[in-house]
Length: 358
Image 1 (cartoon, rainbow, N blue to C red):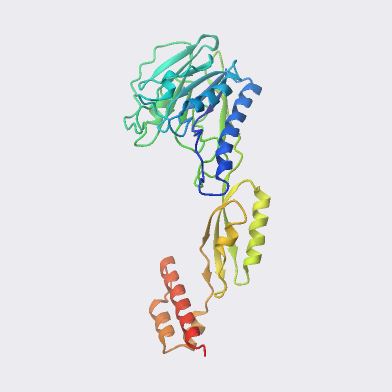
Image 2: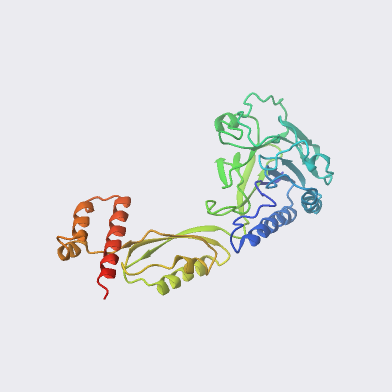
C-alpha cells in the first residue's frame, strides 16, 4: 500500500506579504499543492494523508470547492484529512456542511476516530482541532483492538500547546506509520515509522532547507512500512548566506558577489545575507540598494571598520579620541564592546573632520 504524507499546506496564506514577491509565494502554495496531487496520480498512490492545516485560516466555501476539485481528479486515491490549529473546526465552519468528493474522508471529531478502507485493509486514526490550542497530551491509553489491519495515526502537534506527545510511547503503539503535522520542517523521528512532513512550501525565512512531502510504502502482509522517502517539491527555498568582505570591498564589488551567489543557487529563491569581516572605515554598504535588486528578505551588516587603534592613539594621546580608546580598548572585547568602540571612534573622527572644515 503506497501513501503520500503531507500537511501544513496553509492554502490562502501570503508569505512575505509586504515584499514584491509576496503574491508569487501565495501562488506557489497553490501550484505546489497541485503538483502533489499530480504526483499522487502518476505514482499511483493509494492513500493521501493531510495531517492538519491544509488551510491557513477558516476556509470559505470557494476554498473548499477549489481543493475538492483537485481531489476529484485522483478518484483512485483515498484522501484522509484532519484539521489543525489554523483551520480548526468551529460551529460556523463551512466544512461542516460541505459535500466532499467520494474519495475524501475528513476526521472532524475532537477525539480520535478512525476510517477503515476494506480494499486497502487499512485503518486510519486521527482527530481535529476545535480550538486554537490543545495542550492535553496525546492519550497514551488509546484503545486499539488487535487486528491484522494496517493502521496509521495522523496527529497534528508536538509542542507544549499543541498535543504534546512522548515519542517512545507513540512508538510502542501498534501503528504501521505515524503521520505528523504542525512542525514546518520535515523530520523523521523514527525510521520508516514516524515523521513530520513539513510544509510543502517554506512559509517564512526561518524555514530553510528543502520542503516537500513523504512518499511511503507499507507491506500488505507484514503491515510494516518498508520505505519512506522525502520528495522535494517546493518552488523556492529560503537560503541564508554569509559574505566576507575586506577593507578593499566596494559596493559595486559586493553587488557583483551577491549576484553571482544568487545566480548559482537560483533566482527564484529568497535570500538572507549576513555581511561579515572588516571594511574600510570610510565605506558604508548601501543595504537598501543591494536588497532591492533580488529576492532578498534580509541583509544584515555585521562588518567592522578596520581602524588602527594604536596609530590613532599615537596621533591623539591627549584629546577625546585618545581618552576614548584608552577607556574602552582591551583584550577579549565582546561584540557589543567592539561596536561601542567602533561607533564611538567613527563619531569622534567625523566630529573632528567637521570642526576642521573652514
